[in-house]
Length: 460
Image 1 (cartoon, one colour):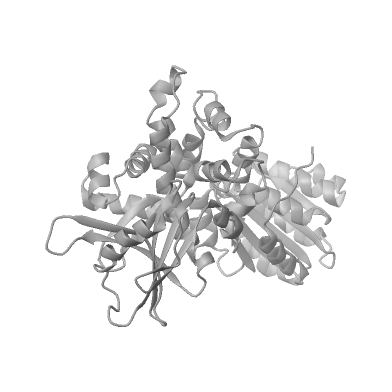
Image 2: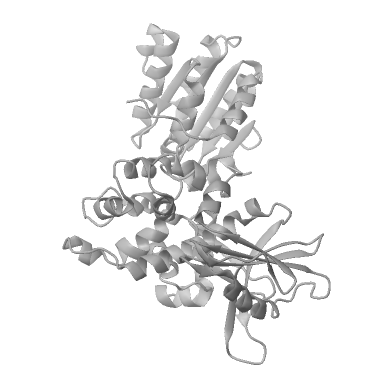
């Protein structure tokens, strides 16, 4: 069955511009299942060239398989019958035999498996690019999922390939609006699905097989034979050696430990030892840090939605799932959705207010007391001194006036251009019992799920 290709218009335009160049060396990378192969397949479907998908097998097998792919495209019986043991010898042969005036592609998918087993491939490609590719009409593209290898061995300044790429594309998960096109769920269930698997096309295709969100998570998360039951083990074990430590850190954050000290205490290591692990998780896109606007404090959250849901419900309750008797309670699910709703708004709020440029949170201790306060999202423009304070409620029939009363009390603690700033309020909710457009002289903007369905994620 032919699968409909959804979104990725900007990435296709980038690849098209690279193809129109005399020659190109393009790198496409991103997390497992994000759609790298599907994107490149779509782009190259009307073009001709060499396609090879590497597996995590020995160097000799990888060379033999790539050699055969090249020989089949070139219709080269001599090459097909040759035994080649080194990547350098294979690319030297290409330099001697390929017509450099012919426009075609060479695509090496899962390139990180080749680098893993043959570190010298980067030096081989450097010589091939400098000595031949730049004088040819070849479109050379490599793609891979192992972020650590791609970042350290291919993209970094220490790599022999540094400065050779004409373009690199970090393929990110799809936006909410693009993700909704995969399934025919009602709007609220569509958002719950997005808060469960994010914008990962392969995961959304699994959900497409089910008529409802509840049926989907029951069968694919909360059964020991479910598609997602062991997925994080596969992803993390490919990237990290100290998998137990990274698992514990992600579990700690998912369970509500958001400061370095509380995370370290949960994991059982000293606070100063936690920072390299957190930096790695941020570099790999699993975790992000959210800063307070007026306090020198920050909290860590799980950026990858799928991991957040999995650790909250599968990892936490794996013993109950093994017995076949688990489904999370409504309150527990709503608490999780409320957290993800807040993060979602923080990540997309600029879509609603394009005049604002920076987004943070604000939290701290009320001056003169031990009470704490928190504002879900604070967006501002340093030049215009405009600032927007936003509250996010994963609830129906929200009274926006009451929320703004509470919000107004908290804004007094925010230290940011107090005498010059122009304040605005925003309330995001599932639905409203009362909307308002102004509160004590401040403009108020109210957005429900229908509004979000129209506007969220329009940038991608």
